[in-house]
Image (tube, rainbow over all chains, first blue to last red; front, top):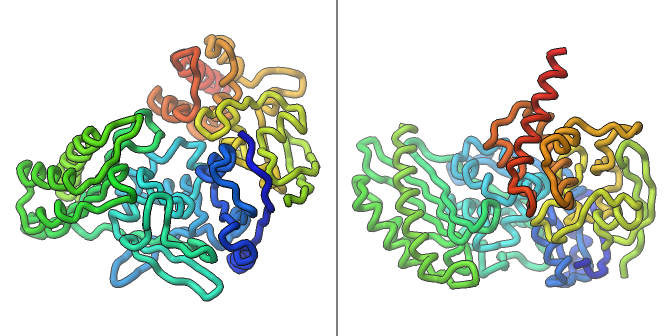
Length: 292
Length: 163
């Protein structure tokens, strides 16, 4: 359980990090908080030739308000620690609720928002929030920055849409619209473990109380964090009721493609997905009412 | 491939300079290189919490950090909780009084996690205590006496404040 040898580079700027990364290409790995990568190194599941440590890059630690495409939101520098995100997350209730499920306090003291999203674990909380809210990732290479919307960011399990010479530099998440309620629910074997299934739900009502917007995302239910678009569409224009929530939950479970493992089989995960979506919709509705 | 580096850190209140290979975990640096065996190594992948230390005052896993990353930073281990004359930290006293350990393997991680927690939240509820220690595994105590010890340490602080 000791990491293999590697070349260690610790640049102070994004430009310096890109330069170091360019030297090693596929053989270089970016080190953020290390709460997923270092276990992989310790277990020798990853053996990169070089580690480019971003912990000294101060320009990647920031939290600020930011508007994008007419939506108000918050921009997080990729190296912002999860504990700092947790402290500032209240404008985005889904994020605030989800982040307490990320590992444990000691993990959040070191783990970063960018590291978690770039790691692209389909059962992790922050990628799921990013996917549920249609966030935007900014990735930077020596050619400059490019924006990747959340629905194009996750290619497969542990595989983000990043080129070998690119670094995730910023994560943008939108604030909720008026009359919106959000809920994050998770079932894990032990608190702090990765989710067996997690659901991120957001409901927006119009002035008459009809459902104007619905977001339902599932973690641990597919090779990437997924949106249950059929379930979302079934809710648009509906008057909120236990019946339409149950229908949407059933649709979401049908859209899920969970696999079984030692912790839970696929059918169980599907059942849990349906239960979490149903509960999440009810909670989101209550909160949307409270927000009206 | 990996060139050794010289790091200087503030460890338990004194400056330490050592030359280390980049792949050396902070946990192994503390135990092996510096002989500070109070930091225990359980799982070596960030799950058990035994190796928790304070980095710039915040509890983190030392098995998920490299010694090179501590250059210019402050590290506190369980050895740093005890006064120079050997007097135990009030939380250590409370652990002793409440029998909050049996084998003791997990104890350094609990202590290091709880000291800054009690500084920020001197009078926590049971729920807050259990949330604070959720990242530390103990196989002996069932956690009850650990929670009691935190309550006791909290009451020491209350007494100290009233005096």
